[in-house]
Image (cartoon, rainbow, N blue to C red; front, side, top):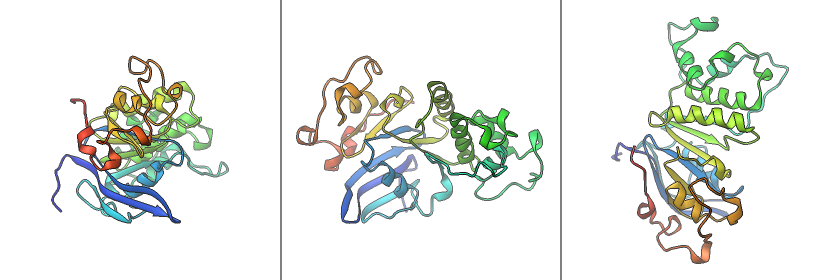
Length: 274
């Protein structure tokens, strides 16, 4: 199917419902290759549904979704996913490197010895561990890590297959400030080489690295623009993050006509130059 090569994610008039509850109605937006995009909204607003649709874990009732010009099902090998939580058995003796190995969708290269450990390991794993800033933890038991370290290990696992699109669901949930800072540094180093999409309700994490903010159910645009018009109390929007406090809080009844809900996402797509 023909599509512009710079478009990583494209939603065109997508509708989705479950149990007679409408989650998305004619939702349209697109993400450019190499962009750092934040998907914000309150819990239950539909962020997770959008992620599931992108990953092909759910099918839309109407409209079209393309991931790098392919259907979500055919593009799964191009997508890396970092879940909010990872269930694991603390009694199971698994190392950081073994967790990261799980991310190799097509197995390991021929010159990789699965029994090896340390610096003679697979180059794909070495690269993922370095990029996620967990190379020094590779032989540590996974259960011995802090929450922030585990989150970075999950990033390494997602990077092990060299994805073109990296998706993170609530990446800063239950993190201390130092762990947030290290994770943000990791994501900043990946910017431009990898398309990054984070789903969050933590507006403080939507920083200067973010190119575009998608506010679920409302509008799309640059971070400062969308946060000034976000559907949330003004005192919940971090003062000074973009040089000042919220200027105005708009709701369904007073949003401008040109918003994502009306299907004209293109008009609000203001992007920073690389």
